Image (cartoon, rainbow, N blue to C red; front, side):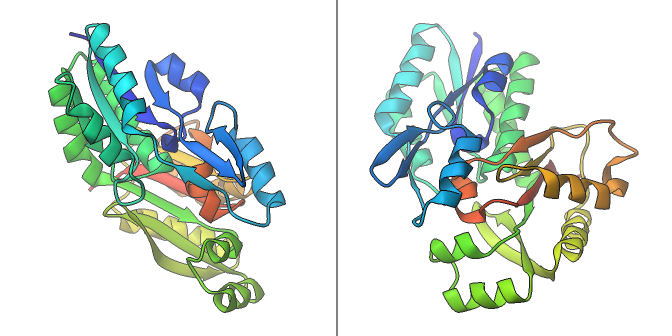
Length: 282
């Protein structure tokens, strides 16, 4: 029986790429005021950041409903397929709970909480597609993902504290002081949640600190999917990071997989963030 890979748009795999890879991506709803958009369908990542920088208030996202998951699961069953559904971290969204509720009516579906988001979730979805292409059944794919997700590392350097302030994650005083001192925080996804793991003064020191954390996390397993991501309208800061961290990659790959970070993390990271996601080599 063939296997369908189902996920949500928090994985930051754009529709055209998902189609080419045979991955079904369900769009999360993004609200700017009373205007509703479908992430990756009626709102591209570029359009999202254009609206974000122009908006005084942060947008908010709405989880995918059990009905929406159920429709995707029903389509898989009617096609005679098994399905593995990977969701945004259950600690960051209700998508995992919605998918589990929907899956109660479908014996052909296995739900996996990625315990990650954005490019960290992306590389786990890409691994699922690889395992499917190798001919593994849904149950074995899900079991491998449950094991391998513990090795996923997502690290990011933020360029501004402004959006963390707007979202109530830090106080205005902390954001102001950080701006004056050019503080660049480094965050990671740990146990399904976003955690602050370091601070650097200035972009150069921030890039060095990000590289240091990559090394401390066990290094990159280049035999498995990995990704670099940026937020905003330009990848200039990411390109600078790639130059500063050349030693991490130059002996392993010729070209680095780069993508734009979307609304789920972009809302709080703001423009100018640089992220690295990989399976730890240790």
